[in-house]
Image (cartoon, rainbow over all chains, first blue to last red):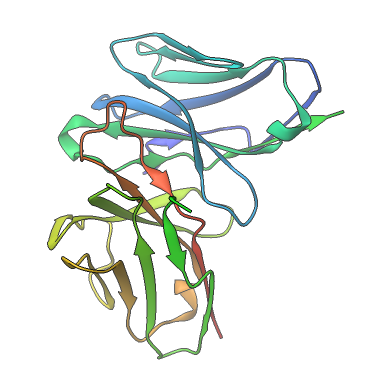
Length: 113
Length: 116
């Protein structure tokens, strides 16, 4: 039962353009969502998070949007840079489950110079 | 390095041997989480520990796997009688408290376990 899904295994964009990574979830108990970036042979690095009481959170070039009715969130990166090339994981947490994170399968972002 | 430290980075074991993976959380963090990543998949939660306590082990296989976080020293994930299917990357994360808001989990670089 995949409760967090990232339907695009890969995404390729040009440097300077916007990257939009999508994530869908099925568990309505999730109330906290996070995005992590991962380079090969390294651990995930926290990027940005959003609580279910908000619909947008922005941090520099990164913005996360949450649509609770659609159970959908997205990460926007603008402008995209070659150094952003990595695997991006969406993760979710439910208050009733304590602190365990449920991850999506990841999307490989490639930003071409 | 004040980050989450995992060792070894790579571990090779033969079927039937034991694997021990170690994790030292970030300074000031008292909560540790273990996740497993199989090839081409996302990370899957295994266990959540505080010092001397297992808080949530709902993601741990019922047999051969155990975890501890003693009062002194690193957290240990132990896999007994390893099988080929245990080959994966094992990641440890830590946080200062169990609550999630504004306290994201910080991850180590993982241990890549290969079973021959």
